[in-house]
Length: 143
Ligand code: CA
Image (cartoon, protein in one colour):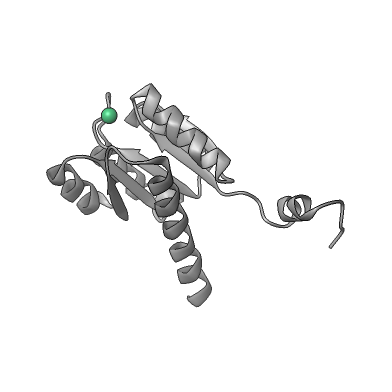
């Protein structure tokens, strides 16, 4: 491998940073989560409703999706169901964000992988994203 500078550069060359799609209609929350993920080393794209989430997910093939449930156009559960029907996003890890137990159950039944309750600290989100991605990575290596 070529060494072009410090450890940071080597890292950037060898491992592409995972791409995370953040779906949340409340601007302040979405921006806060997106910023936390960028600082944590992820690339981030954002969607403000379910339909736009579908379009972005199919166009950009994210490594993980952070999904709010209460969304305009198409709610988070319906969006997850549709994502699970499309081949490119069938296996994409989905982290559900919700404050309501009933919604969480629906979202996990629809195909969400795990959830964290809202409101959550950016640090909590970052930890859950990291855990879900490494779980996915480990499963891939063992299969
Ligand atoms: Ca919402």
